[in-house]
Length: 139
Length: 139
DNA sequence: CAATACCCTACTTTTTTAGTAGAATATTAT
DNA sequence: ATAATATTCTACTAAAAAAGTAGGGTATTG
Image (cartoon, rainbow over all chains, first blue to last red; front, side, top):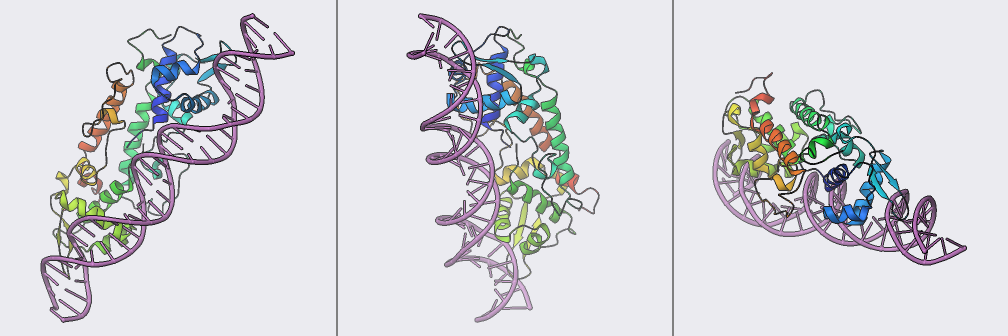
């Protein structure tokens, strides 16, 4: 029942960006340093966050990244989706890439995992970036 | 966010046993067949379940396994603990084998994972084996 | 005493996660 | 222009965890 470092780092980095003054552009290297994450690894994560349009970037000197939407509108579930984390605790209750299981209709445990899946899904759907930076300035 | 097959198989096997007439002894091979789990792998799981006293065994011909407590008293969390599944979504919120993290007091995300951890923990703590076999005979 | 079925440890394979490497592209400032 | 900066993208490698195998041992029963 672990979430991956990709998700953890992504959330931390986005909170970091959300805590910056609005539209301030921060180079990746700075965030990597602050968050103690290897720059090259964070780069991969940022690529995905950008492709999911959660952040925007600017190249060249003085370039960097900045958050592209109001933190209060960015659900944690979106971040997880962006970095490819699957929230489902068991494959047979995942909506995406569902693999067929022949036991599906007689499996006594599936409804239980389904229930758990719903609880977890709701948790990630009902919290946003701004819930994670409430006690700070957060544009 | 996946739970391991060890936990899934363990829960399924225990539900299977719980659905048997009281104190009926079932050889592992039968459960393995019914649950489509490799016997040798299930054996490992049963070893742990027995060590955790969730099941009892009887050797020799006519031997096998049977559940040692009322299914309504067996929390899912106990099963997970028995097979070594960690429920914590992030290492820094696990009670056991906590690894120190230097960011602990200034990490904006930890309280969030902690909250998730609590929800998940409660989920597994408040359901028992009998919740998973309600619609059937379940001693 | 042979057959059955659990007991236990160690090992191997597979899959996933985590991390590295490097070359390309765009932008800014001089 | 061009040097410096910083993102873009793909591919590869290493480490860790999960899943599955193997095999010899022990107890019990008919």
